[in-house]
Length: 254
Image (cartoon, rainbow, N blue to C red; front, side, top):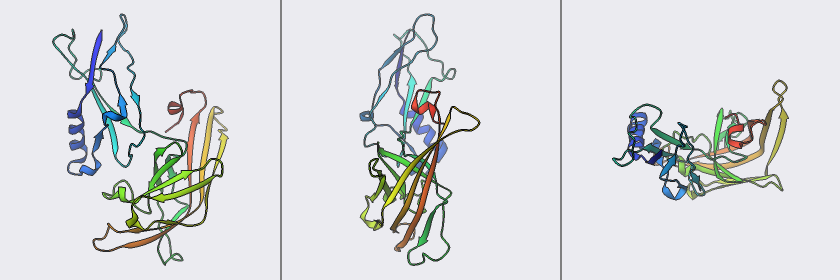
C-alpha cells in the first residue's frame, strides 16, 4: 500500500491555541520547508502493517529561541485506495524538533551567582536550572541572568558560548548591543566521564564551565528603566549515556 503524507498546519494552530491561548510568543512554529526534505508517500510492504519514512533535516541557522514542530498527517484521496481512520493509530504526528550537541542541555545553575551591579558583596540570586540550546556543533546559547523562556523579550538576552576543544576556553558573546554585554577573565571547561557503579553500561558525562564572569543590562523588564547585573560562577551539566545503544540520540537518557 502506498500511503500519502503531507504537512498539516491546521493541527498545529489548534494545538497552539489550546495550550497557550493569547501568549503567541509561546506558540510552536511550523518548521520552514528549507530545513527539511520529506517524501510525499511511504510504502507499506505486503504482509506488514507499518513502515518507515525518511525525513532529511538540515537545521543550520534554526533559532531555538522559538519552538519548532513539523506537523504531518496521512491524507485521503479518491484515487488512493484507502480511507485514513480519523482517530485510530495516530493519523497525525507533531514532530518536535530539538537538535543537540555535546554541550547543550540543562545545566545546574546553583553555582552561578547573579548580583545587582555594584552590590556584588550582597546576597546573590541563583537559578536552579539553566537550559541551553544549540547554535552549531561547538556553540550553544542561554539567556542572561534571570531571563528565561517565559520572558516575552528573551531573544534580546541570548548569550552565546563557544567551546574550543583545543584550548578548553569558552568564549561568550551577545547579539543585542542594548544589553551592554561584557565578559571578563577566561572561562574554561572540562569534561569528566565516570561509569555507573550499579549499571556498568551507563556512562555519566559531566561538563563543567568555570570562571564565568560577565555583566549585562536588562532594559525591557521595567518600562523606561535599565537594571545592570553582574553574573559570576560556574555551571555543570550531567549527561547519562547508555553505551549499549548505538544511536546517539537514543542512548542519552534525557
